[in-house]
Length: 572
Image (cartoon, rainbow, N blue to C red; front, side, top):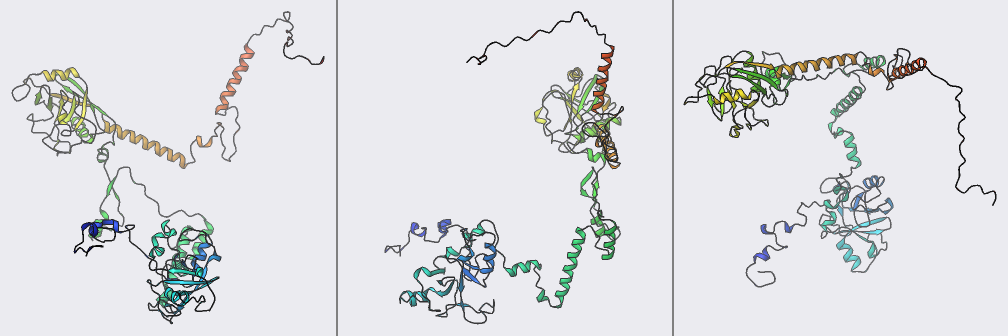
C-alpha cells in the first residue's frame, strides 16, 4: 500500500509529496500554476489556425507557408523562439490523407494519416518527418521505428530515397507537450496576436460579413456599405450628406471650407451638476413638449455662491451693543451659509434690540434670539440649515463666533462668542467668524453679573449689526468686472485684435498692407526715447559756453622707448 513499503496505509508525507494530487499539496503540484494550452498538431504555430500548405523548421515547428513567408518579409526570425530564420531553411511537408472529407468536415482532402499503416493522426500520435533536402515525408513514429530503424532499412517508405537518423524530425511528441505549449511562444509572450491568414484578412476587410451566405440580400448589404463609406468620405471633406452629389459639387466649387452646422454650446458658469429633468418628464408625459437633450440646470446667484471655498473674500461687520462695539471678521470661504444667514438677517434689521440671554464667565455669551428665551429665532430661509465643518477653523482662541444649535443641522439665528478656547465644541458648532476689534468690550460682557440661570442682571442687548464689507456683493461686483473685461477683449479680438498685435517687438507699427512703418516724428515705441535723448544732447552742446586758450597749447609728450626684454639680435 505504501510507496516502496509493505505498509497497509499511506503516510501524510507520502500523500502530500510532489507526485500526489491532493488539496494539501497546493500549488506545488503545478509547474507554473497557470492553465496549459497545447497547439493541435495540424495547426500553424504562427496563425494558430489549421494549415493548408505546411512547412516546418529543422526543430519540427510547423507553419503555413503563406503566413510564415509574410512574417519573414519583415522580421527574419522564428516567431516561436526568436532565433534567426530564412525562407530557405523551411522544409515542405508531404502529408498523406485518407479521403475526400475529413471526420470534422473541415475541407475536402480527408484526414491526415500515416501512409503505411493508414492510422489517422491525432494529438496523441508521435509524428515524425523524414527529410530529403527541401521536402520531407510525414510518418507515424512507430512505423519508422518498426520498419526502418529496427529493420536497419534506411530508405524512405514512400519514395524509396535514402536517409539517415539525423534526417528524422519530430513534429509531435506526446511525451513532450511543452514543445507545443502556447505560453512558450515568443510572439505571444511579447504581447502580440496570432498572425492572420489570407482568409482572415479578407474577412476583416469585408467587415466580417459573409456576403456569399446572404444570397440576394448580400447585394443590398454591399450597396449599403458603399453608401456608408461614401457618406463618411463626404463628411470628412466637409460636405452635407443629405444633399445630392450635384449640389455637393456645386457647393464645394463655391466654398471649399464649410463650417460645421453643429455649434458646441458653452456651459454657463453657474451650471449645476444635474439636468432640468425636462427630457425625462417629456418622455413619460404626453402633456409636455418633447425634449431630446438633457440641459444642465442653472443655479441662482445665491446657490452658486453658497458652495464652500467658492467665495474666498472675508466679510467684516460691527455688532453695536449698549456696552460698546465688537468688530467681526467673517469666514466666508469655509462657512458661506452661516455668513450669508448672518449678514442677510443683519441687513434686514433682525438683530436690532435683541438681547444676549445667556452669559457664562470663562465660557461664552449667547444671543440672536428675538424672543430672549433661547428657544426662538429663525434663519433667513425660514428653516434650519446644515452645519459646515469642512474648513480648518477651530475654537482655539478667545472671541470665536459660532452658530448655536439644538443638535446636528439645526442652525437658525442664534450665535455665541467664546471667552476662551473651547476645543470640545469643534465639529459640533459651525464657526463663521471671530472678534478682531473690541477686546475691552468683550471683557465688559464677561464681567457683567448674572443670575442663577446665567441670564445677565443688567440687560446686554444689540443696538444694530452693521455689515460694512459684504463678501457676496464684493464677489458679484468683481465677477461682473471680469465679465465686462472678457467681453471687451472678445470684441477687440473679433474686430481685428489688440494694438499690441499690430506692433513688432521693436515698437514699430505694422500697416494694414503688412508693411512695417519705419517711424517718423510722431512714431512711438523705443525709438522715440532715443531720438528725444539725442535732441536733448544736441541742445545742451549748443547752449554750453566753451572757453579755448590757444597760447597754452603744449606738445604732447613722446612715448618712451620700451626697455627690457631680449632687445635686437642684429649684432649676433
